[in-house]
Amino acid sequence: MADTASMTVRELAGAVASRAVSAVEAARVSLDRIASADRSLRAYLQVFEERALARASEIDRRLAGGESAASIGPLAGVPVALKDNLCTGYGRTTCGSRILEKYESPFSATVVRRLEAAGAVVVGKTNLDEFAMGSSCENSAFHCTHNPWDVTRAPGGSSGGSAAAVAARTVPLALGSDTGGSIRQPASLTNLVGLKPTYGRVSRFGLVAFASSLDQVGPLARTVGDAALALGVIAGFDEQDSTSLEALRQGDLDFVRDLERPVAGLRLGVPRQARSPQNHPAVAAALEASIGVYRGLGAEVVEIDLPHLAYGIAAYYIVAPAEASSNLARFDGIRYGRRAETGPGDHLMALYSRSRAEGFGPEVQRRIMLGTYVLSSGYYDAYYLTALRARRLIKRDFDGAFSAEEGMPGVHAVLMPTTAGPAFKIGEKTSDPLAMYLEDIYTVTANLAGIPAVSIPGGFAEKAGTDGQDLPVGMQLLGPAFDEARLLRIARMHEAATRWHERAPGVRG
Ligand code: GLN
Image (cartoon, rainbow, N blue to C red; front, side):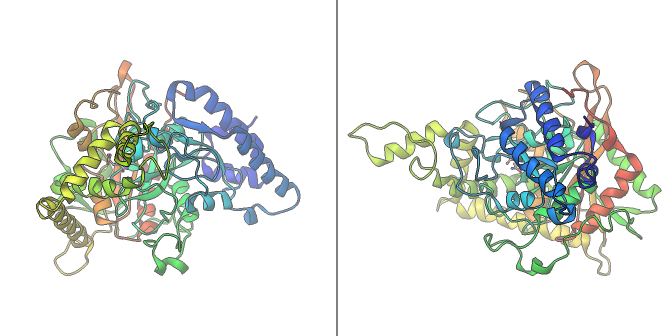
């Protein structure tokens, strides 16, 4: 069998299109790798073996019948995995929660329908922190996922299952969701490219809501080109999502076409605040190395000031729980999922509270309490409103950095680390929620400002892992709203110059 597992999305789609490899072969390789590698990684919550093989053979049949690969779609025969907070009209959609353990969605999310319409073959659904709340996958109600670079470490979260699945080469592409960093942070800890698109760029219809004003779906892949291709497939106006941007109805969704064309006259800004003494030495070194890479390519790199970056975590951990407390009210033991046992004399309230107490894990309960508190009438102004003000100031910082007006920095993108350190040990931060929240220090601002951001492989912390393995560290590029095409070109310049993405983890099943 061809070594399809080491192929990128674009290579594999090309091989299927030219019929050098069959879609069934590609699906088989993916399923076999899951069977072997996932025993130690536990990236998957469900695997759709039969359905995947049937879908793949359908694609082979269409190709054999003379249909062109172009008409089937740009992902014809490519195995993909989905974070399990994306609704699928088949299998279960659990959100990593007991409350939805047996939940079967009657429909598929728009992004899932678009992937499948482009020929992708969904092989399974991946583990996550419950309702996407967390940075390590340890908040999953089912089990934690292990980092393929060092199985004693977390793959990040909340899309840690999707990251481990791609990093371990079980699939070349997976979808995640990013509310405060959940695509970029796991990408950073597993040497992947993870893209959070502009808010409104990708439909949220069928993504189980965590914090509706922050959530976006995006790809995790091994190369910038693959992320660009996937973005083109999932992006675009959707009338079922009221925050999907109507103006993009006719928008250009080809993010691959100009990818190899370096950005001429590139100007990057490095926030003074991101050169924090709290950065791991390897992260600090990787940031300086990336600056060197871009300068070597002729770019101008300037220091900028994002004075409100420091308020990102505080604002995020008020806004996100506030929205979550409202969104999660629908899980009441009646309309969806788990229903607690009640006796004949029990009041309806007992059914609600028992179902929720049994169904939600401790982090979700903590966020519901926090969110309810900051929205309560006595505290709304002091906390929620203040957080919204901080959010506005953060957005203004970025607008200023991107502004080309006289006296403004006028940068095309902001460059900073994705996380302050490489992958941490499983269990290391579970007893200290605040330490876990600090994982998001460099990522939450993009969600608060609504702008696109991508994490790319940034190098390695040498011998930092257990038994002296090298551990990947990520760099992040943030751009103006709806500027993904240029942002990805800037990312591609770094990738082509460094080739960090070519290094694969040792645990390969
Ligand atoms: N780690 C952050 C949180 O726990 C971000 C999660 C996310 O992006 N879904 O809220």
